Image (cartoon, rainbow, N blue to C red):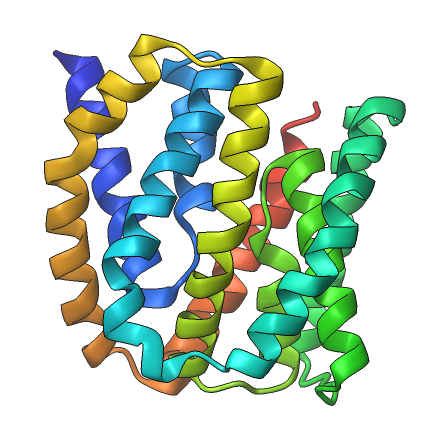
Amino acid sequence: METIILFSVIILLASVLQTSTGFGFSIVATPFLLVLFDPREAIQINLILSLIISIALILKIKHDIDKRILKRFITGSLIGLPVGISIFLIMDMTLLKLGVGLLIVVLTVLLVLKFRIHQSDRRDLVIGGVSGAFTTSIGIPGPPILLYFSGTATSKETLRGTTLAFYLWIYAISLVIQVIVAGTTRDVWESSLTALPIVIIGLVLGQMLFKWISQDLFRKLTYILLLFSGIYLFIQQF
């Protein structure tokens, strides 16, 4: 019973966060899902539920998507995905996650200190590539895009819309790769199905929250989640 309650709370909070901001499901859900499931199952449940949220919202947010940037993100990720797999196979995961976690924290601190960058076609491609590499190496595609959009002072609507649309692509490809390479289990699909009603509640609450959040509060929430993801990757290795 305690496991069911914990699972429900995790999925609800992560769904609300993903719906209201366009990111955060993996950051919030994955650490706790790893307590309840083995790594393969936790990652696949995360991918499935993130996909469901993106599919549910895509028509509602399609007018917020910057399609030009999205295309360049996807193009860049085509290079990044195999690079990430190669890194996963040849690098020590502890060192990789320590380095990535430290980098995210440092860059987030720079953003808090008002460091800004200019958006360009080339940088869009690079960020898409880095995000793709992050997905197949450590399973978290969000931080590079969040850092980039925060640094370019992108509106919360465009950030959420473009990020969710990109996740629709990157998570679908990652799930296929996971199932083919690592296989899957009945528990993954039964747990995902069980979580559906909770995800629907999270979608409704997240939409309400998105309308209430100001641009300034949205930016601060982004910084908090980035710091959390960086610190989590760092301390997870000890």
